[in-house]
Length: 237
Image (cartoon, rainbow, N blue to C red):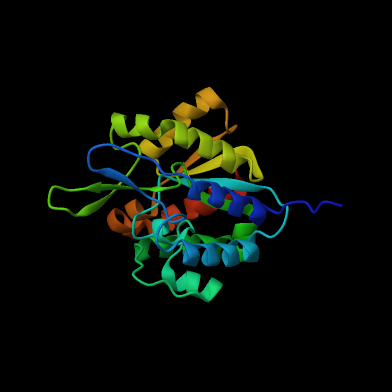
């Protein structure tokens, strides 16, 4: 009897597919792909432990989509929206030279705690990105700057086919497509709404403000946004 693949098996296969991706962009733009970079073996160990801990079942989950991984955040770990300390607790693996916006990640941990804890949260949701590899723009001074796929029309066009293919693959992991949650209520939401009209990926898309926007510019209203997240994730309407 053939063993049915678990959600974690499907995610790890998706990551293996991402490891084969080598996109050539233009000008000073390039891709930051944790699954085929110099730390790929460490990334593989982290993702194996993490997904087998929380996703080793056949439950369907709702997709929560950010825009793309930060070059010194998820693009170095392979786990969306996780910081180094939390990943160390979850996997026992210490990540060197790692940084993520702690205020942003802490907001999402508050969301998870309010929802009922990490295990309950990950049982119901899978967090990922519309563009699941990082995008870097090198400045004239040689500095590497995080970029988003929607930064300009030329970049969006260059990544469009990859984005569509990766979304199809992510939905096939075992996603409940009745609702998708979009982190970023501006350009990220506008893009996924536009392509959803054509491809009919999801029945409904709910926009949630980005944690960075909340914590950097509206921290005094943190509880309001926290309640908005919890209401949307729990009620799903």
